[in-house]
Length: 80
Image (cartoon, rainbow, N blue to C red; front, side, top):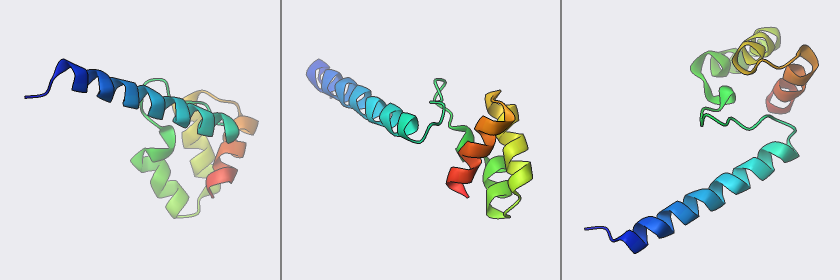
């Protein structure tokens, strides 16, 4: 059985990891997915990236994030 202390340690570790992720996203000038879903990891965007369809990837990223064209292009440029 897991103890309350172990649960607290796990919560602390999760918070630490989330903070590190936020730093990475800021460093890459990408919006941090507050709902926990990274738009870059969605299947439709991954398919567009794998196929090299940059315009489609930017379009999908804009739809998922609500970002403008320049911001979405910059985000996709970093992963392609």
